[in-house]
Image (cartoon, rainbow, N blue to C red; front, side, top):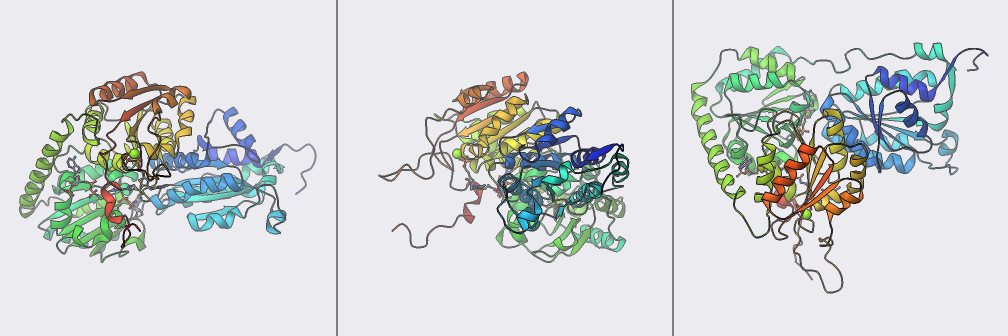
Length: 566
Ligand code: OXT
Ligand code: ADP
Ligand code: MG
């Protein structure tokens, strides 16, 4: 529409920023260039934070982790086609992990894109994004920016959280309208993630199962951690006396040191339990789809999930509790009030014994010296230092570096562990570490396999640039899984890296602190110093190239040739 002369104007850029601010967004993660450059400058000029990355995939991982940690959608801004595609990996990963995130990409001129006439960075981004997120929206008019942002926020947050794509054609950014009309077109959503209360009959059904169980188990997933109802969850655990075990990112939701923690009796509790309460955890590959020998004796599942069709996705769920974790847990607590079973006490005791014996066995390995560090004694040293910093957020990726750290390092507080998640994706390291440091304002420690680190290593400069208190420990075993594989005559082995790589020197080159360590004592000292200094640091930890195993703890998923090498 033509705006009469003399009327105060606004444009797409300003309306977008106003709408984001109105929705409580203060941090944007992204990478600038045509046509979104001005957003970064103007966003910063308004006193907000723009975290500028070296590759959109890492900016996207940062945004998704911001979403997970804060329960507000993390926002990532990218340029068109290639930038958008880089960011899309992270958007898809966010959706897979149920993290709320909004990817905003500039796009090329519609008329040219739609006729495939070869525009600058031409791509039909809207449709490419659609299968990889909860919703994919395009904004065509400035007066629709407000509604689009609200819709994106509500879609990302409500029900099962996930990713949303917002497509903004370049021209819209500079399209003007009356400032007054523009202001009227913006609003903040009321209650964008409403409580979803489970039906009373469903609550009774679940409570009956718990009351009649002999060997009940509570299994927490990252949906329970995301829900931010930590006190209610702890009360549920303690009022029922039922042993619990966490999925990796739910570690610390109730402390790993809690007497009812059964993490180190994992196989036993999955196999022998008769009733399992799943709280914000899917029966996907990570839980062997709820069947087979992992799950041992027949059992009944109670499943708390906000997504109704998650129920029965793999095996029969005897008592579905569809609703948000907080409402479901509190409804169950009310229904079970005053109930504690003597029958279940014997089971709880047996589980605690198994858990404690396994922990004690592992403790021995953690302090056994070896000529070159292995995963046990290196991680043992890290664990001892981190004991004194319970509120540090741990980021973790790799195979052996991931699986062993998950096992060895205790977590004491909710949402203090971010890892490779549902896809087991390498490369989340530096983006996640950046977001964890930014969003929590606390120090972060990232434990990365040397392969895993490589996926986002240049982003280390982003960490030093913003002075983020992140210590990256690179578990340097010289390869994927192991560093001792023999090379064929004609070429370096496809599983190995240059053994002369100096990750500590990479840090110094990128403006951080760097130290190489060869023993658990040196590692502990370097970590302690780095946390105390608050300086961005890489600790290059030399690990025995023969210490790892192929694919870590999931070697069963690794396909090998049936007929062998030919
Ligand atoms: O009860 P049992 O006896 O079973 O014992 C369990 C617990 O009771 C016990 N436990 C304890 N004992 C003592 N004390 C304590 N505190 C304690 N706590 C537990 O320990 C065991 C194990 O417990 P856990 O872990 O809870 O149980 P389990 O059975 O392992 O659980 C099953 C799972 C499936 C839930 C669990 O294993 C899990 O969460 N796994 C996640 C695995 C995963 O996602 N892996 C990453 C992918 S691997 C592969 O794909 C890689 N790639 C390919 C690639 C990827 N991924 N992405 C992209 C974008 N491109 C390519 C690559 C390239 S890994 C990789 C790089 C690898 O090389 P690096 O150099 O980075 O790393 P290194 O290996 O270090 O060299
Ligand atoms: P993990 O990998 O830790 O086992 P998953 O990512 O598989 O966890 O499962 C998380 C589940 O939590 C998803 O099915 C998701 O729908 C659910 N979820 C997320 N947030 C909530 C919430 N606030 N209330 C109930 N369920 C939730
Ligand atoms: Mg390695």
